[in-house]
Amino acid sequence: MNRKYWLFSILSIFVLVLAACGSEEENAGEDNEITVVAQTTPMTDVVEIAAEAIEEPYTVKLVEVADNIQYNEAVFNDEADASFAQHEPFMEQFNAESDADLVAMEQIYNAIVGFYSPVYDSINELEDGAEVSIPSDPTNEARALMILDDADIITLADGVTYEASVDDIEENPKNLEFTHIDLLNLNSSYEDGIPLVFNYPTYIEPLGLTPSDAVLLEDDDENTFALRVVAREGNEDSDKIKALNKAFTSEEVYDFLDELAEKGHLEPAFEPGEE
Image (spheres, rainbow, N blue to C red):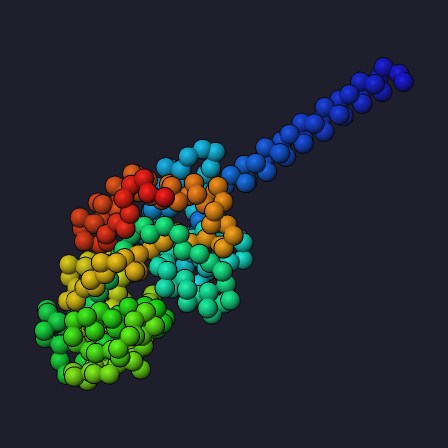
């Protein structure tokens, strides 16, 4: 073997070793990246704060979506590691409809939902035959009806809770007329002058409204509808998801939520350091 060929062989081996090392480092980086899907503020804000709080070697990549379907599809189809956009009853609805296996993880915060009115200053002014806009998806429909039931405005059948629908209304003394509207379009109902409209603080905020403007608010001491981190079954105990849960329940996230709590938008559903 001549000297030139020998040098060329050594150089080729060296290049291959470097390429392999680079590939291993790249793959390791990908393995340590946690993709989290979220929809809108303050969910996206929480993801970004958790990204700053997460411990090495992990990083968090936020993927924003525009509707209430994509984030579950992404996690279910292994296109993302987790989502932060929903409460457990909504996730269970998706699992049932899609034969999916998503798992609700940490409770992070409970949005202060309720009913708003462009007509009334108080729920006591609610008129006979008034139209009421409620969400069209089953879990948020049930949530809205349960608020009205708790306020003795309607009476739901005994034992009906998180699967309640208008068909379960046994007493409707004011003869309210219920209209189902997609959750993301409820602002239009308010702008159109519908007397009573269910909504979330995140969605109603563009209209210049906050929960303090609502005529009727939810009272959910058990945090049944707290927003949660959601992962796939079988992945919930992985090191990546454990690290993500720890970041989501960090002091940094809690302080951010506590500031929003002072404005009446939400209530933190965890104590810092919980996992």
